[in-house]
Image (tube, rainbow, N blue to C red; front, side):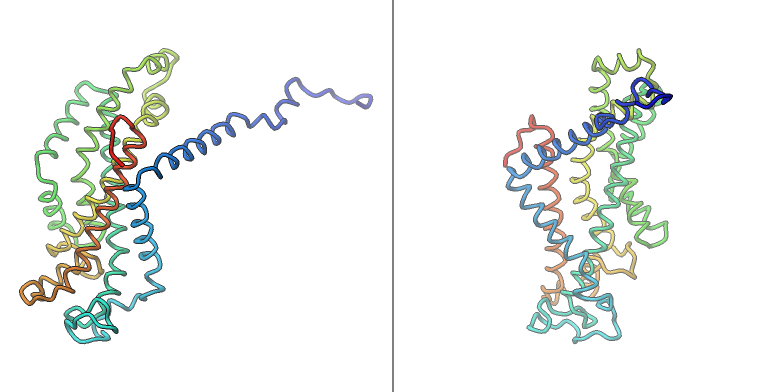
Length: 316
C-alpha cells in the first residue's frame, strides 16, 4: 500500500467479493433445483406427459395459425368452397354453411378458445386465492361475511350466473372472461382458506408475529408461498372448466359473434341443422378439439397435484 493511502473500510473487501451476492444466488440455485426436482417427478407421470404433449401441440397450432391458415380464413364473401361440402382432398374436414374450410376455422378458433380459457381461469384463481388467504388470516366477522358470500356462489349454478352476466353485458371476449372468472372462484377460495388455516397454525407464524411481522408480511412471505402449489394445481384444473364454459356460452349464442371459436363453430353447426342433416364433419372437429384440450389440462393438473402433494396417491 502506498504512503498516505486510505485503508479500506472494514468489510469493504467482503462486500466486493463474489460471495456478497450469496443470499440471492443461493435463492436462485434453490429455485432451479426445485424446478429440476419437480420436472424429474412430473415426467414419471405418463398421463401428465401425454396431457403436456397435447397442450404443447395445441399451443403450437394456435401460435402458428396466422402463418398456416391466415387471418382471412373467417371471410364469408370469399369462401373457397361450397356450403357443407363433405371432407375431401381439398378440404380435409369439409366446409361450413358458408363454404369456409373447417380445418382452417378449427385451427384459428384454437387461439380464442385457449386464450379465453386461460384468462378466465387465472381471473378465477386470483379471486379465489385472495378471498381464501384473507379469510383464513383475518377470521372474525370479515371471514364470516366472505365465507357466506362464497357459500352463496357455491349453491348457485355457475353456468346460470355466467349466462346472466353475459346476457346483460356487451357481447365480447372480455365479457366472457369476466362472466366465467367471477362465477367460478368459490371452490378455489374454500381450498385456499383451508390451507391458510393449516399454515397459520404452525409455530413459525407465531414467531414471525412476535418479531413484529404485520399482516401483509405474514400473508405474502409465509402464507402465500405455502399455498402457491395448491393455487398452481387449481389453475391447471380450472383452465379445462373455463374452456368448456366458454364453449357453452358461445354455443348458446352469448359469445362474441365477430370471432371464431370452437364453441362458436358448434353454434353455427346447430343453426345450420347439421345434427338433423347428418353433417358430422361440421360437429365433430370442434367438439373433439374441446374434449381433447379439456382432458389434457385435467391430466396435467392431476399430475401437478400428485407431484406437489404425494399424499394424494394419484396413480400414474
